[in-house]
Image (tube, rainbow, N blue to C red; front, side, top):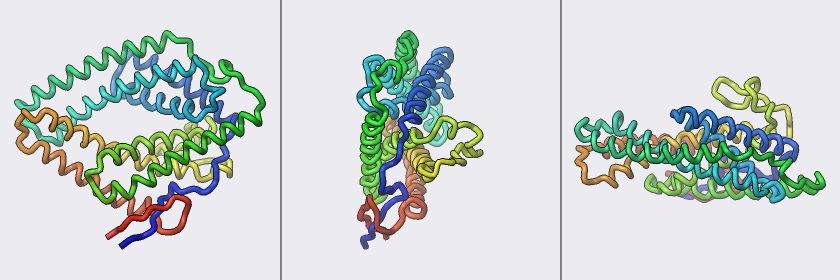
Length: 315
């Protein structure tokens, strides 16, 4: 049976992004990457790897949605090297995740875990060496200032350019999520689409954060779960809810992705006898996927007419 389904990511009007707020966030996001790189270079532990990755994602959101007048050579180079650092740290994180899953939930015997662990550690060390080299290169650059290093002309003209580009990118990500949701809910093996929703949700979340002032995102406005709890600007009243929804999607799909990369790693190294290890991982992954489907059906997806509408049959 077919139903018209739309998620609560649906919106019908352009978001009133403020140029001044955007520029404040842009500058703040550059400075945050600089700070995180310094901490990461001193100690590339799990926490600092996470922090540098999220800082780079936020900077990328600023750069991607900014008018071309704010994408000059210095900031372009800084963002480019940052993205290289992000990719390397993603691979480092994957090695840690795979080893953790095999050691605990995979219930893999120690004699079989040993050879795989050596491969993972060797790969991680190689990537970490490259990542630290890239971090040093990034530290050597003069930290760019998006406004001072750019030619800002009439405020109103720049505001129109920002509004147009920002909303175009937001709509593109939201449309992709809406398009892929029915696909992944109907088929647990659509791993690529699940991965894309996770990435798009993360990128869209960081784009929505650009609507909020730096003050809105300070500790006094964040609740015990890390959600932004107090927004005084009526024009962006619904934004914290959207960010919260995207965080939920991102979190649960992130967990599923961790199992998917572990399963893929086991298949790649099929010469090892795993004695049901892959089945153990796949079973947990199946349970997490079913929780995601239930979340979509009960909390995320709502019947009705709206701007983004997909047809999907629910049993």
